[in-house]
Image (cartoon, rainbow, N blue to C red; front, top):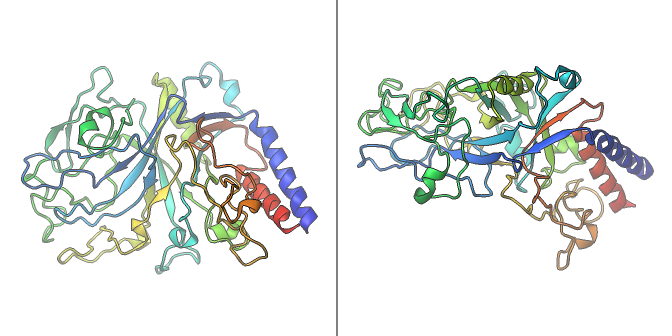
Length: 420
């Protein structure tokens, strides 16, 4: 068994490595951008006539998605967020002038795990609603910014927009070629996108006293001053955001021998099974764009959509409260995370087998006084200075053995070494 595991690990790694040489990998480091857009980072004061963003997060090592939409007034509690990732496609062959290049190619999106807290409990719904499959797993939507639409940075584009309550407001950063920004806080808002200026999103209300009160008529929170009231979903995507597909991550215990969480640095790949991501790149080339933008957000399952009428600050139709999995962050490593977090405690058998944890095969320093130093397979903390762990857009010929096989093979190899 030990020999078979060892050979399986080596074969998987060599097979994928050989094919990976032909892949085109575009990290956000290469003329792209990645940032998290958080809904709650807007001014909660009801004394100001207009809403202003209070922070943008371009220069931080946070890149997460979360769903929490309570729809309540003036408590800054709508904490939904979306990952925005821009990829430079200027170096890709054009599908019109070089169709032969694309004949056997598929597109993939890859992100890598940032934290040690992505356990099965965060990936499996805490309750099984009526009609749900036996294992009801959290899933994510992937959207692309429409390349054929007109934005503020395009010829003929306008910075004047209309919020969902019908109020006009100025949004000079609503650009196709958006900037992630140089820092957080009010002093840096002009440098990058925030919730009120991110392309593909329309905020609910940008003017106190003029917010829509008809969506939840009779709800105590449906007041003209409630800038947090929503249309019933945790996101506010508009027609500039094209839905590309849905992505469900595998449960850790189904990959590893009993481990209940992902190791830091582990890659997860979205396969463009319906061709929508590939079409987005083609449409961007046709529109003369040099980049494509992907938005990744936690997809709230309709089986969990409350239908009762709200009373007080409780949940109402389509409003998702904080006391569920919806307030969990799901994080990838952004390009700003130049060194991954050290993960010496990861154990492929979840502690049920012999020996100490191996540590993450992608990020484990192996240096004393680390108690697991002898078991760290890589003896290094993951280096992301050139984008090895950043969000990536990948073009390659489909392989019988996917990246996940490489992950499984590498971890089986590490486990075999530990138990030998």
